[in-house]
Image (tube, rainbow, N blue to C red; front, side, top):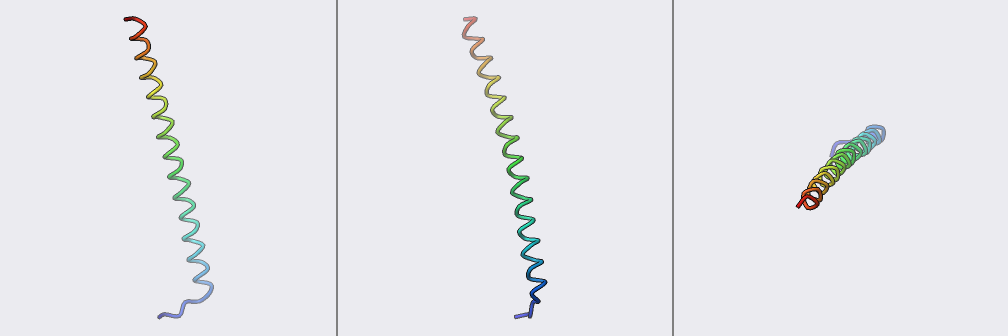
Amino acid sequence: MADVSERTLQLSVLVAFASGVLLGWQANRLRRRYLDWRKRRLQDKLAATQKKLDLA
């Protein structure tokens, strides 16, 4: 196996950790935006349905 210096190992672990944090943060932002959009859409559909029922 190739001899890897301690510094290179530390750097690669740091880069892997940082990219994981960044990826997780972005994924969570996307998920929150999707959930907010879905909530708004369902609220609008519910309001429209209730309006239809009130008119009937």
